[in-house]
Length: 121
Image (cartoon, rainbow, N blue to C red; front, side, top):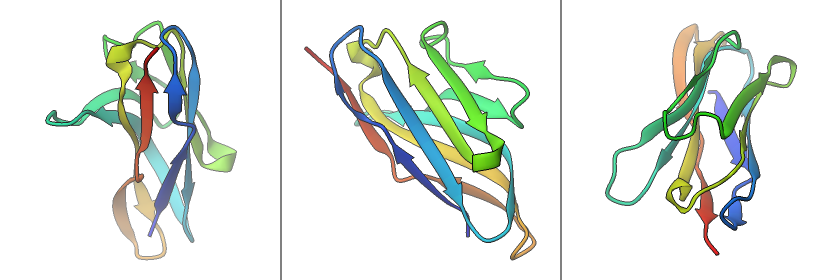
């Protein structure tokens, strides 16, 4: 089973920055696409940024120019650098990864436990 662990959330003032990390672990696996999602109470989880296979990136319009997604394939880790944070960025942020779990010869789609980001003065 491929597990994802997020870190880096917290409280920050408007205009500040945070960097989220998502580390994947398991016995034998490959990672195809990775992405960051966020969710606020009563709303559907939404895509923030995605990095399919590490060669391209996609961003929600609301974060373009402020957030940067990246991944270190050697460390099986993905990052989200968030700059110029706004109160409306407040949410629980989840990382997601999909790929092949060689230990069971099946594709997987895993989610992290979520990390709270609060933007407030």
